[in-house]
Length: 447
Ligand code: PFF
Image (cartoon, rainbow, N blue to C red; front, side, top):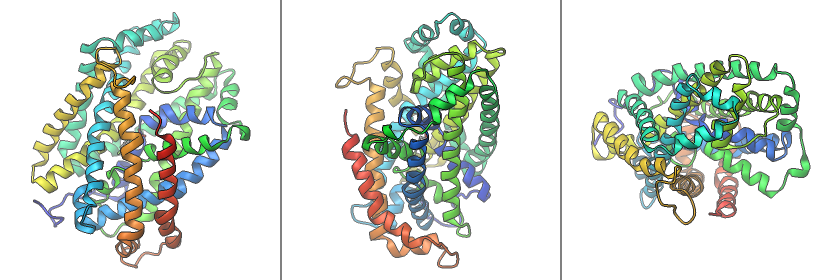
């Protein structure tokens, strides 16, 4: 069992840590979910609520996670063992389980992005132009061999990066992929907003409509914010454990929240102007990404290039998130069970791949449904709507009540680094975040 000694791996630089943490946060959730939820929930009015939520609650939980991880210098389970004892390690355990479950289906959808990069040049545009993008998608997800092969390819990439380690793997690749992601996003936005008729899309996306703001809107913003920031499962605990003691935590947490929100917000500018300019109906999730958008690209000059770039963007977003999911599991097996990084990466990566196969098969109807839901949706529901909120509640309570002194010292670097809103942060962790999350949990728990 390796303790958090001098031999623990570390991020090479603050920039590397921030790119890795932002890479974890920026994922499929930002690009295919945020813009649509915004458009449907009152546009600009929703954005204001979302901003308030992520910068108050999201930031507070993120800072708590990073603090716990850095103070303990261990994985999610080990951190709670060391700082809290008692039943607290169960919170870390839930996180590790969530990591297994989320990555199992995340790898499936991420695999589709690889397939669609290739299809951008091999028939997707023709299908889109003929109004057959939906048929093409249906045929693709119903083909077990194809879907599982692309899932395997994506999982291989994830395992490879995690196997290389923190500095030479996760940090190095996130430092390449995250800036590339920003550049691609900007290219797509420029293309979209300069199309004739782009204004209608911007209107759908951002025109404030306060009549659409209800309790459900706030619920949607909380749920989205939480998943999008990778909170509640010890991801930021694990990443924080590789950060040196000199870096200031509050500004790092704030930067990650800012970058994640920025990408989510900007994605809407790449998507809706184009969708509306070509007279299509907006949608969410896989429908938007794999059916509507290819049909939109098919109508543009050089559509295959833009389509390829869009799926490359999704691929980068997904890969920098999937490595963080696997790292939560790997760090646990490494720290607590003494496995080598190589063994943990390959064994756990393969187990997660196998766990994802039912999800991969479920969308083509090749796997029985669970109480009316596709297997993939059932796993998504259990992890995103049950395990993450529960984790978030306990992490905030832990930082705000149980480990309070330690938390204060850790986020101020033992008092040497001022954190002007420390008291407010503590109260968000103590009361505001647990209550707000408990509310999402209870209200949002509809199968
Ligand atoms: N934040 C990622 C997204 O928005 O797609 C998903 C995610 C990654 C959730 C890592 C949780 C996590 F620990």
